[in-house]
Amino acid sequence: MTDPRNPGPDPNPHAPAIPLPANACDAHCHIFGPTAKFPYAPDRTFTPPEAPKEHLQALHRLLGFERAVIVQSACHGTDHSALLDALETGGGRYRGVALIRPTTPKAEVERLHEAGVRGARLHFTPHLGPAPSQEEIDAIVALIRPYGWHIALHVAGDGIAEHADLVRSLGVRVVIDHMARVDLRQGLDSAAVRSLLRLLETGSVWVKLSGADRIATAPPDMADSVELARLLAAEAPERVVWGTDFPHPNTHGFVPNDGDLADLIAEITPDPEALLVTNPTRCFFAED
Image 1 (spheres, helix red, strand yellow):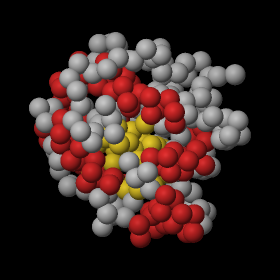
Image 2 (image 1 turned 90 degrees about the vertical axis):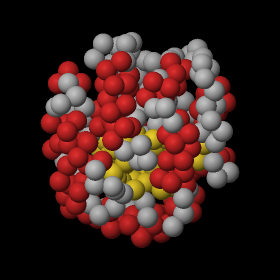
Image 3 (image 1 turned 45 degrees about the vertical axis):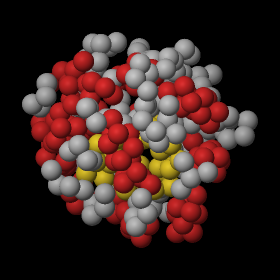
Image 4 (image 1 turned 30 degrees about the vertical axis):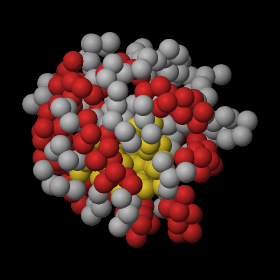
């Protein structure tokens, strides 16, 4: 039985009004299942409908994405079998973001790296489980640092302001998911938005301009989240990337059409080539 927070994606996405540039990268997406082959974790906090790699590939063909960063979902826990299968299918066109624990063997991290994983995600969102302790974070960073991975930071509300010092202390590249899921009811001069802009100034922080549907205050109108995306893109045009967040897990009443989301790119930046091609190449595909 699926979770009512997870109805699945819009079944009828449309192609973007403006074609995406060649080699465009969807910098944040997920795959779920198929559970007969890749079962969900027994201790998961949510149960989404299946969205296997074939569904993601079909969406990418429609939208015009040739590359992707597939983020390990908490519903699969630390079993990366589905992610590894997708990375192999991608033939170098995909990168992955893993869920690493302090107890993850070094050999497993090396195996994930060889398969195309380039980041580890930290959740500070209660619906996905307890936040990691400082000791756990230190251990995870120590595991991934030799491979040049980034930390993908998932926060919400005032979380980016609360964890700004942590971000500065990590000593590795940090990629903030979904524009930090700030509360736009507080406006663009909130403590969270100011913290996000200051972190971008450090030069080691990147932001995914994904999740416009999640932070919009009056969906389906996403004008306020587009305004934030424009602000972030103007602040650091060389360190922003964009993703669909397909298949939109843990939504609460509004599931966007992925074609509508892609159409917002033209409103966010005058340089889609940088947002969709140049920047993700540097962030996820470039080898040291």
